[in-house]
Amino acid sequence: MRIDIITVVPGILEGPFSHSILKRAEDKGLAKVRVHNLRDYGIGKQQSVDDYAFGGGAGMVMMIEPIASCIAGLKKERSYDEVIYMTPDGESFDQSMANALSLKENLIILCGHYKGVDERIREHFVTREISIGDYVLSGGELAAAVVTDAVIRLIPGVLNDETSALTDSFQDGLLAPPVYTRPADYQGWKVPEVLLSGHAANIEAWRFEQSVRRTQERRPALLAKRYKGDNTKNG
Ligand code: ADE
Image (tube, rainbow, N blue to C red; front, side):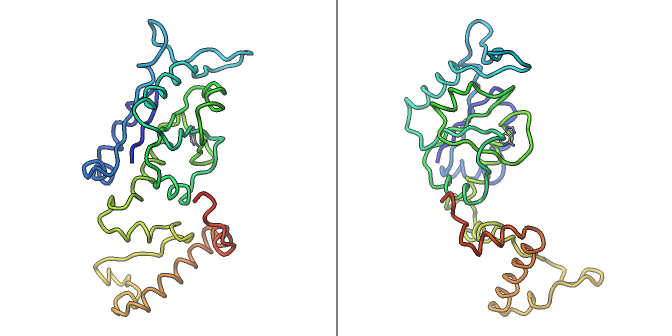
């Protein structure tokens, strides 16, 4: 999988992809993330990427031309499954959307800034708009990093223990059960007996029960959705 991220502040994205699981994915040749500085496609001596909003009002708007020429350059090299725009008014990102995106070959992610992008970019280039939550970030970069991380770790072979993504919170529509490690008794705080029993079926049953209980307590809407069979809306 290849993800091309278009941004006016590439520096924000220098860190996340050169560490840990994402670096391993790149080293194994399973995922490639490339960050493109929109200013390289800017207009005139100033390499402008934004301008005042028609009709007035505070804040600048990202112009069509730099984004169009950056996207056109990328599309000359390969075809893309989606051109994603990160925006707080997009579709809510969740695990089922991450699953669906992890099956794609090539993605472009466009990060908004200032007052956003000229609406014609959304109409003519963007195929999907994603929000990572009901709050406003100063730009789409951190949101793009969140989506990229959630998607890349699902590509088969990226995680060492292939089953571990399958037991993540949300992967089966439930929150993950509690986990413990040594010591089995820390100053009287004991690990649940069943986990020390070596009885695989009992351990599995206990984990499932804990998952259901935790989901019921913390995110009851997820449980309702799971039992309505509405857990695959994006995939
Ligand atoms: N850009 C600014 N806020 C955002 C959000 N919540 N999700 C996605 N992109 C954003």
